[in-house]
Image (cartoon, rainbow, N blue to C red; front, side, top):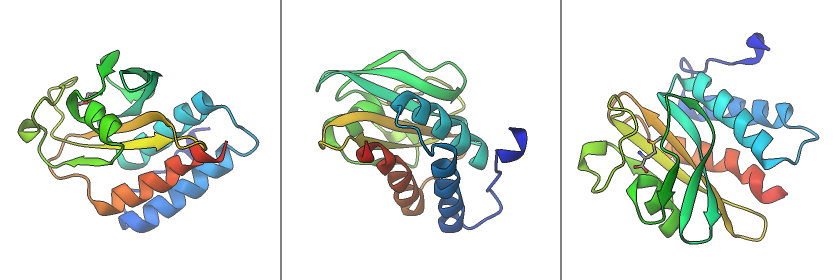
Length: 162
Ligand code: SME
């Protein structure tokens, strides 16, 4: 399978995400299992861009608690309360959070001291309920922008189809 792990760092982001979404959809064809999808997406996104940490926090208590799901990278914290950190804020507000400098985000939860910037994308199911958030950390400041937001929101729209 090594040959199907694309490295898309050389491409303009919009093009990279187009290829990545197509790749994710090809790998997931015939699957409706959300955990399999989270594992596949975290592996492909992580290696496509060489991120520090890429993974999911799942809603395990509505409006209260997120618990870690499939991820790539160093050990992530197990649970995050709604409203706490970047993930908990994205979950409460149901809005993508782009953090250029994690040190300037009040309440940022540090799982890896090397993390400098972060994006967290809320994930809704078909009924419009919050299912999880996708969290990505980078070693460089200002690593994420609207292209990442658009590309990642498109990729996780997969979860609203099942
Ligand atoms: N930084 C996140 C916590 C999760 S780790 O980065 C994997 C936050 O503030 O919510």
